[in-house]
Image (cartoon, rainbow, N blue to C red; front, side, top):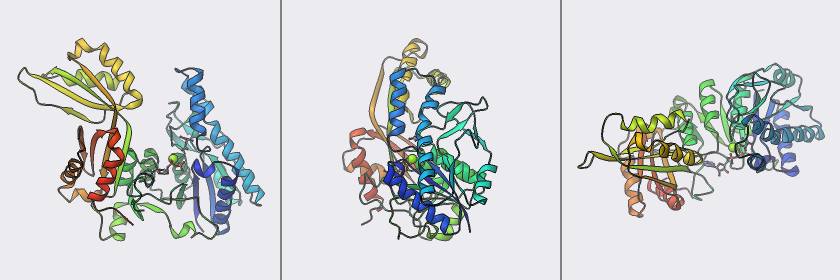
Amino acid sequence: MARIVMKFGGTSMAGTERIRRVARIVQRQQAAGHEVAVVVSAMAGETDRLVNFCREANPLYDPAEYDVVVASGEQVTSGLLAMHLQALGCKARSWLGWQLPIHTDDAHSKARIEGIDSEAVLASMASGEIAVIPGFQGVSDKGRVTTLGRGGSDTSAVAVAAAVKADRCDIYTDVDGVYTTDPRIVAKARKLKNVTYEEMLELASVGSKVLQTRSVSLAMKEGVRVQVLSSFIDDDAPAADTIPGTMIVSDEELEGLDMERQLITGIAADKNEAKITLTRISDRPGAVAAIFGPLAAANINVDMIIQNIAKDKGETDVTFTVPLADLARAQALLEERKDTIGYYRMLANSKVAKISVVGVGMRSHAGVAATMFRALADRGINIQAITTSEIKVSVLIDEDETELAVRVLHTAYEMDGE
Ligand code: ADP
Ligand code: ASP
Ligand code: MG
């Protein structure tokens, strides 16, 4: 017997038929002799709909009230799943974030989990009851509802799994595992049996939204075993215990499993970045500090940065990227400081995409970046900026070339499946 936390995403919870299927999957897991707790997302599209209502109410809405509104999507699905489980003859009840409670800080709309009181879930599981917990939500120490940021139900599930010391956290979604790249973009993407925490963390942070980045770092920190698998399965599909999906494993574990490791594990694309160039900045100490200091103070995350070498007049151009959602704010801020920074013109481009290749194999192999640049050049794709880390190379390109670039790289690194 194992203790398993099962999480179901938005597409899996979208409507009566799908929730009924989810209830059967949960029932089957319990019938196999396991103690189970479930974490659910809102129905697909619901959170977007609720966010829009907030924007319509007031573009500068109060984040605390935003949380009250957007947390409601998960309240609905947790109650509905408990009903479906009861209809199948299971004992089940919902536990809202404030009821467990799931304690968070009070950074509304992007709160962090500080701790979960696990007694209720443990007692519930021990008595054969299925605890259904809405993902994405918690409660601050001021007693107000909070939410964890988009995609946050993954993090809720991992946090619950850590709190109840679960043997496994199964993340059920609309694809049957983690692929070498988004299978909706590249038909030849291959499913990975295993991926390391570190690689998954890097992939998630550069745009593979199959898992929320924070859920991966939490799983890594707490040592939670996470499997990604499909909820779109028939009753006779292989049981989750046979690990039909993708298992997130430690580096050491993978060494034992996979002798022939691939150089590149995955490719991700992110269209939510924008590029800013400030021209003719004087090439002197303190010049870049004058740009990035104020952006940091305004909580705007700068990702890629290039500073060209000074030309004849001791002037240089600086190019960098910011999240698309922060572009307008960044522009306004830099415009305000035009004289202090001392640039000539500000150019902005929101039609860019960041393409990243990730793999722990690149630690011990040279030439990964060179292959990337050659493959993109051969297709006439221009690179506007580059960044690297120990296990990742990212390039910034024209947004219109996103799909082409991902496909070309998938082939160049010999990752194509059938
Ligand atoms: P859920 O609602 O279940 O949380 P998400 O939409 O958040 O589901 O995540 C699943 C989606 O992630 C898939 O439908 C797929 O399009 C996308 N995705 C992006 N990159 C990958 C990848 N490398 N492997 C699998 N899915 C990916
Ligand atoms: N419903 C929330 C969202 O759409 C949380 C989640 O689904 O993980 O972002
Ligand atoms: Mg998700």
